[in-house]
Image (cartoon, rainbow, N blue to C red; front, top):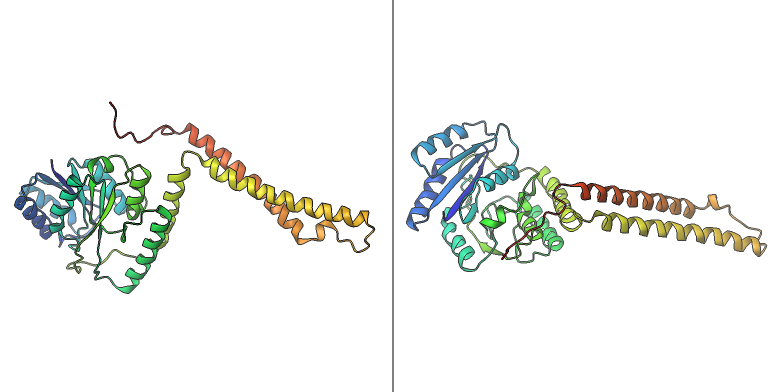
Amino acid sequence: MDISVVVPAYNEVESLPELTAWIKNVMHQHQFSYEVILVDDGSHDGSWNKIEELKEKDSAIKGIKFRRNYGKSAALNVGFAAANGDVIITMDADLQDSPDEIPELYRRIKEEKLDLISGWKKKRFDPLTKTIPTKFFNAATRSMSGIHTLHDFNCGLKAYRKEVVKNIEVYGEMHRYIPVIAKWAGFNKIEEQVVEHRARKYGTTKFGFSRFINGFLDLLSIFFVGKFGKRPMHFFGSMGVLSFLLGTVMALWIIGEKLYDIANHIKIQREVTDQPLFYIALVAVILGSQLFLTGFVAELVSRSSSNRNHYQIEKEI
């Protein structure tokens, strides 16, 4: 099969018939073998009934229904697991992504041997309350991930080589950072494509300000797990040792200063416990010990994990 189109849907009953018809038209024009996987993320507007109707009319449509709303990441993860195409295309169900972009995305994945192509909605129809924070987080993600080729990490329209989606796991709200997850998994051929952004035709946006906070926390999680997931002691242990040594040096300095004053009969002598630096040193020593122990415990957990020796293997001969 050439293409699998994975579409998460949450209360998009009005747009689903138009979207699936549009995809079908594009696929037939270019003679692709394909499937459309519609993942109903706990909709309560009749989206699942509409998916069942569409399935009866078109055998290329597949449906997956969640019992409740889990979020876009969960919908993408189960869609990836069900996909059978050589190239997987993801797009939103709100008709803001154009299926006309699919042929070019497919061509580039195949001909340029890319792992992932992320869409860039260069001209957007979103309000400033959404575009300005999005630019900030895109800049932060580029800086932390080292993927400087992408302007928009959160664009719903993306194309993947099959091996990519079968070797990554998306959860929480980490769909925003799939290119980062793919890079940490060893898929480095990541490029960008300018795509059309259409104004919303039906329904209302599912965007909320809390997603920025959750998204930033997920970015920190991806960065930490990707870099230190299999060696947590390197992070916590290093921080712990540095903090412990800093506290020890400060404590020795205070004690040495006190002994020097006594040896030289200096009458104005402050008690060690009267100096603020003493308590800073004490906190640094305690914090260092705790960080070291945290790293030790994390190392034990990591070593007992069932996937402690699970690594991405590209080829075997």
